Image (tube, rainbow over all chains, first blue to last red; front, side):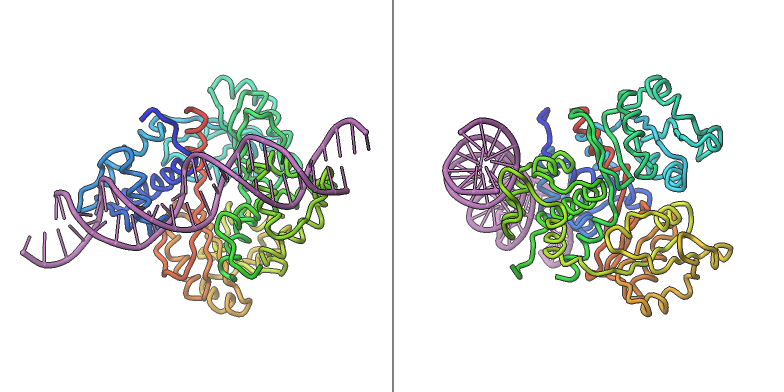
Length: 206
Length: 206
DNA sequence: TAGATTGTTAATCGATTAACAATC
DNA sequence: TAGATTGTTAATCGATTAACAATC
């Protein structure tokens, strides 16, 4: 129980979390492994296997209670609390991220937005006022931030990540195409839709 | 050689593609499996193993030629051509996607942007003028589009995907949090940064 | 009862990794 | 030659899946 999940299991559980969150919003009280399979493209047997490793959450012939399963998975992933994150970049992408309900839905709060451009500092984006990059260290430490999201152009991305790391950030989401050099204790997740698209195309064409 | 790649191999090869594209931009002529490993978090042995299944691309004691390896992987993934995609949504996120160099870098062209809001139709976003959703079918068929990107709020996402599917689109990238109902021959890739973040946090906390 | 869906087994297949000879 | 890095082997481990009894 106290064992660490494998990378694969943790990744799948978080996908189930997403489906359950949306299913609940749509008013679905119950959901079957087959339904989760359709939305995640993960085999239904594997879903049941993943879940049954932690308990008997379902009812045979009926399925899983959406609410209850959501809570169970949150417990397993230890993500029941609130988490503060910092956003660097108040341009179009930064604005889109700051205004999206997608983080709040999962207990994640954007606690600060930083930007180099003096014109943007002080402006309102989402529910926040944009802070200067100069204050990144102080504000991030103050608000206990260990996750940073980089939404700046590629040529500013390394500067942004350096500032975040100085401020104690350990997990970085990189929405630029730049390769970031970071110390070994910092996790970098780079999102590149173009690369995902080439991958998807391969299976369409092959 | 003509065999179909497994899902895992194709995913990893496309990550190598991203690193090589950036490394080339940074002027690196040569790269080692160890360097690719640092940027992708994929084990160096596995990288060499993946590549050596298709040929001997490297030089012992030296590494791989960036250019040459990039071309080889493009051949393997059959992504050497140009690809046209459609974007639905001309809001902040749509604007950010349309203006990003990330697609062009990989031979992907955003060939049309569609939007419901009449105020936005006709406006310029990136290099394109926004078209009405009413013209989605005609324009998409005309420009041979089989990939669609959804950058609209969750409550319009199902409508957007329905229109795309009517127009013959087979691969959909969903940047809303909505669950989309689609026929079996359509691939949906949903991107949810919040869910990825919870997954990353698990390994940080555990 | 009849139908549906879970929980679990058993078998297979692919991913992962350490180790090291080959060779640049 | 000495150092570095590939290509490859061999062994292990986890993922995947079909099948089906249990049971709601």
